[in-house]
Picture 1 (cartoon, rainbow, N blue to C red):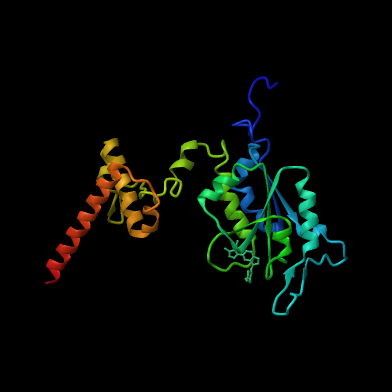
Picture 2 (picture 1 turned 180 degrees about the horizontal axis):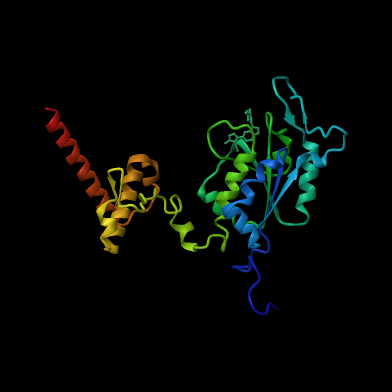
Length: 271
Ligand code: JD8
């Protein structure tokens, strides 16, 4: 029986451990990002443990070879299965582990996937290099393949850091203010409204006067309208997916009418 405070990471009585193990040929790439800001604080608070492991630890030859030429020919090298399988078997250590391989062929990473990973007790992240993994690696390890986007990177390390940053901040207790993870863009399905701080005028650019009015209800309405306006202008693909309230529909109608008015005014000036 637990006396006093509940043990860390047992919020719902399910999470017994929050552990990430990263398997990489470039462990030094993680030393900056994992030891600053939110990721550092999450580890310092004991909310998550992140291990970084050099894949060459699991080689047995004097030159620590992890790659080989591709069957079928072609340029570049492919990561050999043996060291990766040995490493994953060592890191699993009896936990209920999920293996994630960062590859360009993977499932597109998203806020939804981050929130699912945040509930897992142990995630092993495989970072490839060169031309990538021998395909028996993701196959045989039942790895979930994840991609962070449709652009070409040199390896899986930066994608692993992106996944960690997005995921760890969703673990309960990591953010000081629990509400900020929920109000974040993508969590709400809309882009954020613009933010301002002092001074009230900077190089001729004034802060929108409503933000200085002290009318909190008017400010909330203005911010919601700005969020809708920006999403409509910059990411109309997101608008379709969000559930809009009656107020949202009213605000969008206002935005559309302002747009129609501005078009008519500029046409009148031009002619
Ligand atoms: C892992 C090797 C480089 C990939 C030849 C360039 C993810 N969104 C993403 N873009 N790129 C990657 C990624 C790239 C990787 C490896 C992830 C391992 N490369 C290769 C194939 C073509 N080079 C990624 N997640």
